[in-house]
Image 1 (cartoon, rainbow, N blue to C red):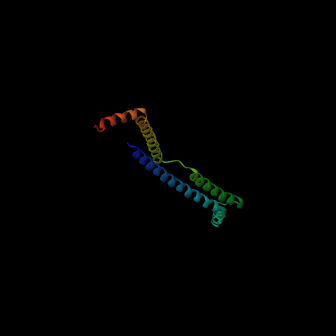
Image 2 (cartoon, helix red, strand yellow):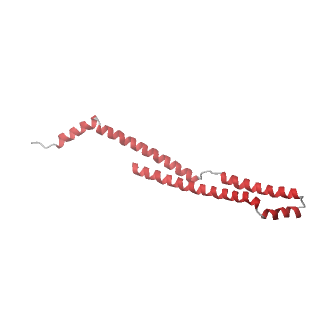
Length: 141
């Protein structure tokens, strides 16, 4: 592969990485918003209904029903909070990183070979070779 092809492949892999990262971050934000909704739900009137259900149907005391509602809220907050904090790259993103890294290394190696070839051709050997070419193609009188 040529330098441009490796560069384009590395850029394509980087695009895949950025796209997958954006999807992953979007999923995190969604889970964190849900967790925030449940954190705020502790102040919503639905908890009064849940409190009444614990009080009447489960024959709990007022404090027991309040503690049960708080326990459900904290449990849901922890579940969605941990889901929102979890951020593992998927297999496509990992593969794209490997592809990007491989092509970046290929670009580096191609540039190294090109720079060595340039030094050889532009250095003393190159000047001598240029003299030979000039002597071969020079006009003779």
